[in-house]
Amino acid sequence: MSEPQTGTAPPPATDLPSPRQIAAALAERVVGQETAVREMSVALAKYLAGLPSGNILMIGASGTGKTTLMRAVEAYLASHPRLEARSTLVRMHANVLGEEAARGRPGEAVIGRLLDRAREQLGPETPVEELLDRACRGLVFIDEVDKIRSQIGDRPNVAGIRAQEALLTLIENESIPFELPDWAGDEAGGETVRVDSSQLLFVCAGAFEGLYDSVYDRVTIGRDRGALKTVTAFDDGEVREELDFQLRDWLAAEDLFDYGMSPQFLSRFEAVVLLEPLTVEELMHIFMDAPDSAYRTSRAYFETRGVRLALSPAAVRSIARAAKEQPRLGARALREVFRRVVRDYEFEPESTVQDGALVIDEAEVEKALGGGD
Image 1 (tube, rainbow, N blue to C red):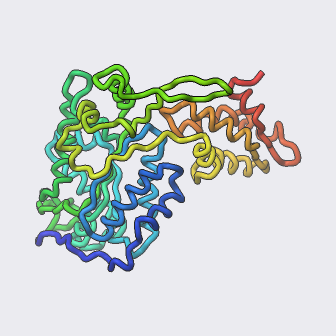
Image 2 (image 1 turned 135 degrees about the vertical axis):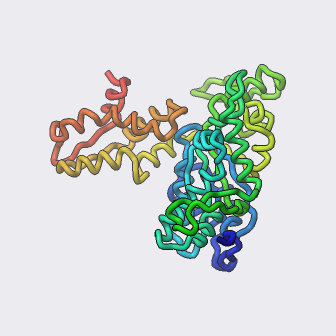
Image 3 (image 1 turned 60 degrees about the vertical axis):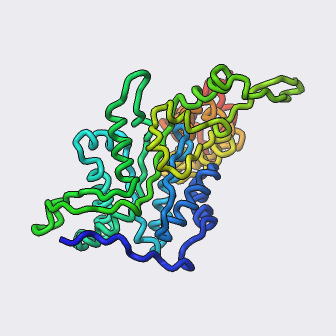
């Protein structure tokens, strides 16, 4: 069997979207995170043009939008037929790479996922050479990459070291040996081919829990003590001095090295993007407008019972504020908070209905959350 060809010409430049156009499309699904959206848009514009595009490392707490951004990318590529040649995207957990590295086949795990996805897109009757061509120009999203740090505390994390090395092999554009699956046919099934990974785009993401605290300690009580200056703040007529610490202003490569990401690994990422904590206004927008929001799901449930659910603006803000108080959950906190508010109503939808409507105001939200009388 001949080696797979990965040099298919991209669409003419005039047919390719600009970074601004890509960003506008992604922003329809991603709330906030302008920096991450912009970086992703530039990387995608280069990637779609068949040019070398820098891999991206996203750092952000759970619920800030890392997975949402990648889903937006996947939906965007799938919705534009002229981009279909580069629309093969797979999502993998970083620990899977560690497990596969222990078996000596990390590259096969990634290429295999891409090949399966290409087969889903093009159909099972597509020649394997065409499937490999599509797979070799795919996009790989590695989630929870912070779980493959090279050490945990003072102890080496062997699985993490292996997983970082496995990713390096793929990202460094090396020729990857890949054993074709049985479905490739009697002649090709089981045959080992060399796969060129040079056109893959990698996006890695993780919460990196503890990184914020370690950097804060470095600039307040550690080796850079005194570098962070106090600022004057005004609150309810009172003046006070406080430290204005933003991780994006102080994060250095050495902090990530100390966290357990190897210099060789980090050097393969052109952009390190920090996702910001969501504001109350952004959480309100997600709660009301996200297609899979708990509010929309609950509203649809009440409609099946002949009840129209409505929340006052103050009630929505109160729910968002309560979610904001759980920074480690981000937007995911909205679901748990709203559940506490709506669960009794959902159990007996007709009990508090007036004229076919259930209207929840701020006082009811505060009472449900324990803040009322």
